[in-house]
Amino acid sequence: MDFTAPSADQGLCFAISAQGQWRDAGRHHDPGAVAALHIIDEVTPLAAASPLLAPVILQHRVNALLGHPRRLAGTGIRLNWTTVHVHVDPEDTRTAHTRTRLEARRRAEWEAKQLRMAQAVAYRDQLREDPTLVLAQMLLDAPQTVTDQTISLIPRIAEQVAAHAPGATWVQTARLLDAWFRDMAPDAKRFIIDRLCTVAAEFGGEYLAEQVEKAHRSDIPDSPAATAE
Image (cartoon, rainbow, N blue to C red; front, side, top):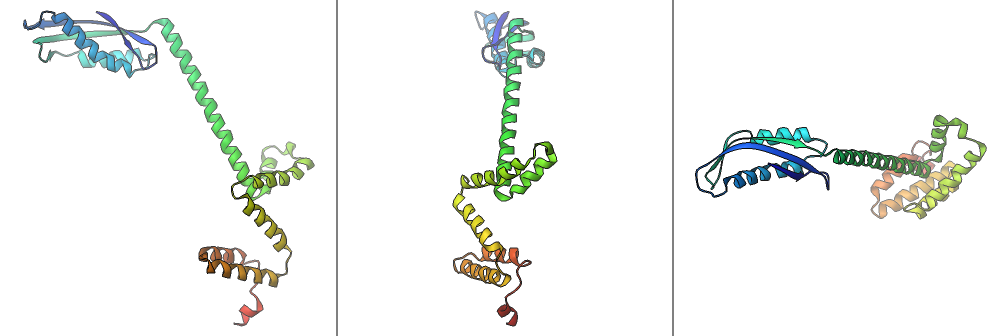
């Protein structure tokens, strides 16, 4: 008998040809139909899970399943043997190959887009934290693209990135504080850090106070008052 079975590729079917031998105990008036329906029921789910471009694999699976004698429960019919051949229409094969190529191209484009997004995120984060890292990377990857204009643009781009980042107000505040703090005398820096740590600790920020103190320990000497104690 011949029939078609839908494949895992939407709209494309396998052509199935089955031969077999059955024996009837006289309990059914159309034992051939029962045997044929059993074969169809066994083949169909296997075909639905198989790509159209893998007919040989499907054929082996079906024959491994149906290639031994079995009794069909409640029918009195025994299948002595069954052999199944799987075919694919050439036009369907071309369609499946085209779909595979398109899917591979779509996946490659998606992966390339994800890579570009990841690179953009990395550049954005570098610009927020330290614009000179971006400049250093450009010098390593493409030194011919680095000009005086590039060097002047990077800080301006970094400011725009920071302005549109989550918590942008605090990023701008941190930059202002850094510019104000940078040229202070060591005693003044020590006083501000001590006061900041005290305020942080009063509002439950003991960890923050410890990290701030650790960050400035090497570049700001202890105040005379602290040394005297």
